[in-house]
Length: 189
Image (cartoon, rainbow, N blue to C red):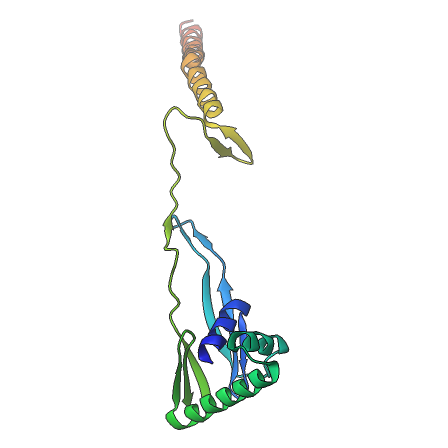
């Protein structure tokens, strides 16, 4: 019965155990970590809440198909299974549910330690690869330009700086000549 319950939990993301509580699967989406330049895959984690709900009718239909019986017999068998689990939890203080985790009863409160879910897709390294002499897009402010466009813009800026050095030198030379003429004109009379 435990295998069928675990199968239902994985497929439908929730399972109610009468008199014990509810299990549900929480999914954390895939994430991009820019600092470490990596991508993690989505992660499923089984959670437990102490809410005491009855299983839905769809669960009993699923269970009846799995154990090849009718819904009334499946409901009775599952209720007996949940009662045995509750009795075992009260006597032993912990119950291991294969594929789900461990229920632990501490001072009248039921705690849950989920089973470690396997990681099917490990963390991926996500470094940008830029090859020489190939065009790629570059974000400049709010615009996207190709690397070739940016190289021509940068090359033009450097050539303008190289070509205009004489302008600054000429202005400084004129100021120097004007200062010398002013000095001789004022102090040589």
